[in-house]
Image (cartoon, rainbow, N blue to C red; front, side, top):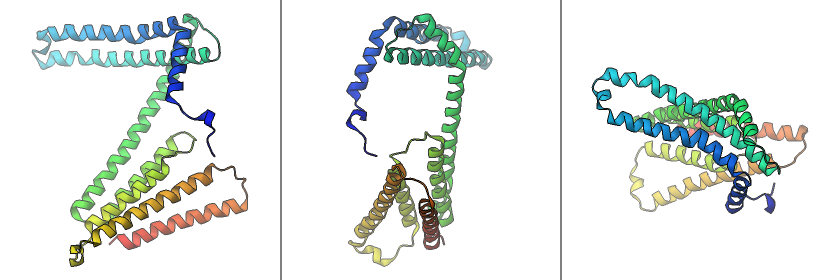
Length: 271
């Protein structure tokens, strides 16, 4: 679906609206920032300076370990204050954009009420990020082993895990279509092609100067074709098509075609 000009993202317009929002109620915005961010950060900096001047704290490991509970408690307090500030500023911004001018107490009450949900959402986002990093890190192990040992099944497993990471990223993300999905598909194909190219047996024909550029062009063409195909699927998915047997049949055929491509890659690359 084409984006209307009024819906385009413009940095200047966003910055202008942001300054207008802050200027409409500066006491609330600056007061909240000072209370929940500026003041605590200043106290933390002063505390760090005082600890740095006290050399006796670094005299033994026991003294250093005694600081761990304080650091842990400080991290929890910072997380709670950040959640309150985020919820309160969001409430103040939404009210200002709606034409209202809420008071400091009302905004602070909203922040205190929504602090726990904000912390929960942040915790879930952190878990999702760790899960994605874990899958991506797990993909590097078989990929590196496959490259070092010239082991094709390891490359298959690594590329499959990278694909699973992208699918997991889309599943954990929002319901909006990811416009970067075609680029991700093309890069995934490029990783796969270069990985298997690197473990192919070297033959005397590779000494020809024109062979390598032709191979590079072929690999890039395949990756570009994969990205274009993914873009076509993205455009079709974003179209306002009504359901029915025909659309379901097209989906089934697309799934069968995807499995056929995977089977072809496995048959031609896995040894």
